[in-house]
Amino acid sequence: MRFDACPAFRPFFGRLSTCAKAALVVLALCLSAQGAERPSAMKLFPEETVVFVRMANAHDFGEKFQQTSMGRMIRDPQLKAFIDNLYGKAGDLYAQHAEGKLGIYLG
Image (cartoon, rainbow, N blue to C red):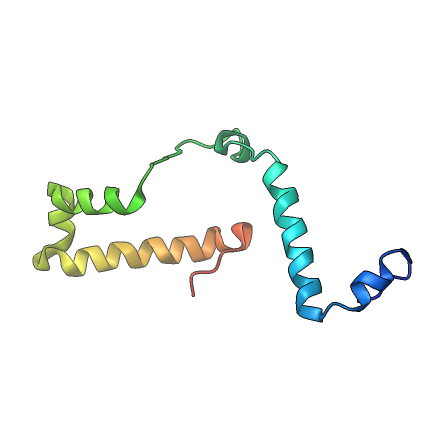
């Protein structure tokens, strides 16, 4: 890392290792990010958004969902082929329509 633009910093930063310099940069970025206000989810989604679900604890929600009749039905061995086909089709539709737009590839 070179500090030709700021000769006053050269004596201090010249003695630091590369790891220490990187740590200082990361620390500075973290501190500046803390001061930045995070936009709400409502501002991040486009106006055409039809459904938005927000939950405080997704893990707790998942465990409670497993206790419901729908959760038990999804785990039912007699419905396994149907559920697997349903998830497979949903994954295919996502791959066809959303992967490129979102930039998130499921593998």
